[in-house]
Image (spheres, rainbow, N blue to C red):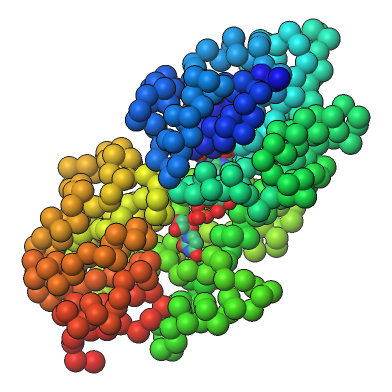
Amino acid sequence: MANILCIGAGYVGGPTMAVIAKHCPQHRVDVVDINEEKIAAWQSDQLPIYEPGLKEIVLEVRDKNLFFSTEIDRHIAESDIIFVSVNTPTKTFGQGAGKAADLQYWEKTARQILENSSSPKIVVEKSTLPVRTAEAMERILNSNDKGLFFDVVSNPEFLAEGSAIRDMENPDRVLVGGRESSSGQEAVQAIVDIYAQWLPRERIITTNLWSSELSKLAANAFLAQRISSINAIAHLCEKTEADVTEVAHAIGTDSRLGPHFLRASVGFGGSCFKKDILNLVYLCEYYSLYEVATYWEQVVKMNEYQKANFVSKMVTAMFNSVAGKRIALFGVAFKANTSDTRESPALAVCRALLEERAQVVISDPYALDNARTDLSDVAEQVIFEPDPYVAAQDAHAIAILTEWPQFAELDYQAIHAAMIQPTFIFDGRNILDHKKLHQIGFNVYALGKPPRTHFPS
Ligand code: NAD
Ligand code: UGA
């Protein structure tokens, strides 16, 4: 039996430890955080995050072998293995501002581990970190006069929000990187043994520390690059009457390319893609690899263009002015099946429409609370409305910004009748039946497809 501790009870710490606790009943798993409210929520029936299947697992194992607490020091002292999944946002100040990872929370945690330890421990990097962070971690932890030795292992997380439990239960792979020394390899084995409780050994990849750290950044960069690539092609589609959905299908059936991550959109969001690519860009610049840095930076630039261009197309289509017009934004979560709004393209679209003096109404099934916080500085100018029918009432336009399936199932005939004519719909996720909407009477603007309007060309 081992005492497993996870520092950081966020989107990663909570779900990953719940699944580990479920599959490793022989181990005790404690999850700690500095945020008292969050820990109280993890201990309640209103978990702090929404993830399909999460609540069931938490209810199954909580207070059996999964515990949530704010007593960080005590749990550090009692633990054998410590996963660190604190946030690693983009630095906003000083050297590397706007690109480099802000590792202050990370370093604080390392020092706290050292201060409260009186036995050797395995420290696992679960957060996404720049390559060679483990070296700094080792230096901090092992420069001690207590005679203690800490092994640092990298075990990056690849789960996606909205499918966190499925991804943890059945991942394509788990990655564990460690030192080649015998104690390093024993530490790697201890982490492998945890995952081997429910995964076949061949799905657990072991590498050296630096490959593991870099693979996480590279995986996110490749995924985001595919989205920016298809979004770039979508613009060309709009100029040439090609249809991006057809092009994506035609490309994706090539088994060398595969069908995933080829959905054109208003832009990728989420807490990690932008931050991790900028982190990669900063690393390249640090090593004077300027052409490589520029290559990856373009993925983020394309995404910024995507969001700005979406709004500019809306304004142009609506007779070059949206001032005073009610516009209903359907979806503010950065993707479906999550309440997370971090870096959501919907927030950028909302702010740009407010700049144009539109009246913005946001509707979302799960993410309105987070959106209220994100938009607190402009809250007086935005209406938050859970019911999409009410949101669209007297609106000039609807913009689909999150691919919630329920938005495709609404009664658009009724919605159209309640809107100001002529009606506009901008599908930033290509999830609606555009032909049908056009027949109902909407002027329909989808991504990477010719517009369907009722105006003479
Ligand atoms: P999060 O903000 O949801 O959670 C991080 C938590 O760490 C917060 O609750 C915060 O209060 C806590 N924390 C910060 N400093 C602390 C300290 N000193 N002691 C105790 N707790 C502390 O972040 P997240 O989305 O879970 O991401 C965590 C890391 O995992 C990031 O590096 C991220 O890049 C990576 N990651 C995230 C995802 C994802 O889907 N969100 C997926 C893979 C990897
Ligand atoms: C992403 C990765 O998929 C995870 O593997 C990784 O662990 C995680 O980042 C992380 O490191 O944080 P996540 O951001 O939760 O996961 O969600 P994704 O499904 O990757 O979607 C990211 C964004 O891209 C969303 O805004 C989504 O709507 C958008 N997207 C995705 C597209 O616009 N088109 C697509 O084809 C796919």
